[in-house]
Length: 188
Ligand SMILES: *[C@@H]1O[C@H](CO)[C@@H](O)[C@H](O)[C@H]1NC(C)=O
Ligand SMILES: *[C@@H]1O[C@H](CO)[C@@H](O)[C@H](O)[C@H]1NC(C)=O
Ligand SMILES: *[C@@H]1O[C@H](CO)[C@@H](O)[C@H](O)[C@H]1NC(C)=O
Image (cartoon, rainbow, N blue to C red; front, side):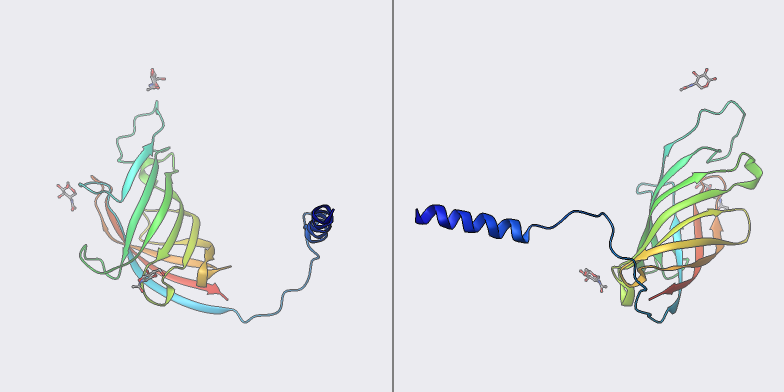
């Protein structure tokens, strides 16, 4: 009898604390106002397709009917895990990495353009463990260009901003590039 009572009470307790899944949304409220901060970053992305240990690999390519002899013709999709370094030298200190994809997105081979979908994460310093996300068109052949930053994680949660990109080195034969990133990030 005692056992039954205990079981009954346990059941009641369980029902009482079970979460209620009535709505899939909360009340909409005004967030407590926090002051937005700005951080500037500067680093070099080393995008190396060749060699023993490439940071960028072609994972898909369209079967084009039109002749296109460029390294990454329209419709090529590249997976990247590229080191971010403090300088343009291949031996300079690594401070993070960019992981994601880029798609060769221009039908005109003379206007080589990519759309970049990547997460730039840091592995040292104040922003170790934080990252920002780029989702943007990147007209690679233009000397000065800009990509949009659409979000972030960790200290860069809710980030938005932009990165000015300059080509520090580019080899059209191999597709290897070293790019200077000057980033402006608005975050909390
Ligand atoms: C590529 O396209 C050509 C022309 O349409 C076709 O003959 C060929 O079989 C295709 N190759 C592959 C691997 O799909
Ligand atoms: C970065 O953070 C990771 C994980 O918290 C830690 O293991 C690592 O030692 C940190 N690196 C630096 C350089 O602070
Ligand atoms: C590009 O890479 C090729 C193959 O490694 C090399 O022969 C050539 O000299 C490089 N060109 C430039 C401008 O660095």
